Length: 391
Image (tube, rainbow, N blue to C red; front, side):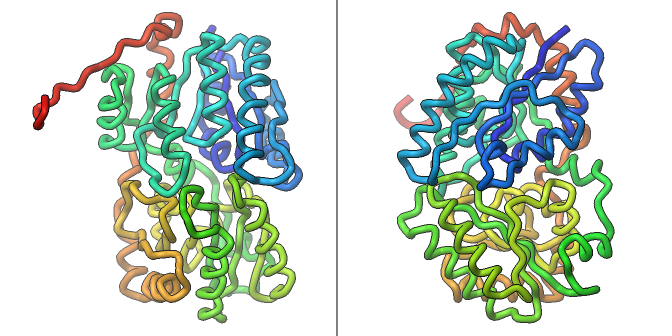
């Protein structure tokens, strides 16, 4: 029996992990454990641990790490608490494998704790680039502490190998979020309108905007530019989901809450819609707008245009259905106008998604079952042959 522990600290990453967690729960020879932390346990982030329980999944360890505020120093404190407390949890859980998805600061702390506690790590979504966020460095650091790698495209698989990981341990499995779209029973348009309190056939945008943590321009200024651009489309309601717990995220959420109060007819604000309602809402939106990874990775499979703003997702492979623009009001307005035009909507409806690969969860489970998890602890360094100048 292999005990597989899933680490989850945010609503977004849990939404991606959920089908894999359920598949592990149903697989003979596997025992599911969970370590739930970070934004899940914060009231300001919507107490999204409730979604895990509502899905019938266990919460084996709850680890509080977030402090009041979302500043650089509070993130550093949370990381320190995470390393200390995650180590204690891992000792109690004694997993054979820890599954970590992505690139956030909580995930880096968990990977560090697992390394010290001699717990092998399976890392999902390694090899990607997000040049506008500190998560970019965290992701590659987690790769170097991990023992099995499940990437979302072949290009990312090659990049993980370039980082020195043995090719036999790196698998291109596609994106779990795309699998979600295919597997989840998405709501009808009428059900979405009821949940979002929208009039029948009301056009709307689905908007998520996180801090770009490496940008010199303050996150608030970028969000204000986005709000100004949205004012140019008064016939569309704007459905906002909350920013994450990165530095500056709290300020963005306060601004969104105030904006929704000031314009109740046009703005809707919710910290979290949950994965099913989020994807269902995206399915009928005129466009998905902001700088969330979901706009790059999952939304193209719905045939809906994405307007990606600023540097946060810069470097990711993207579908033809994704438009990029700078974080100023004029550029955002122009990109939205293009996105909702007849020609671009037709293009988006037929565009392929580079993250789409069948059987993502099954591929991950099969690779884990076939692995000698004890032997994974010893990691070779795979040298890539260099043929360029200076070699």
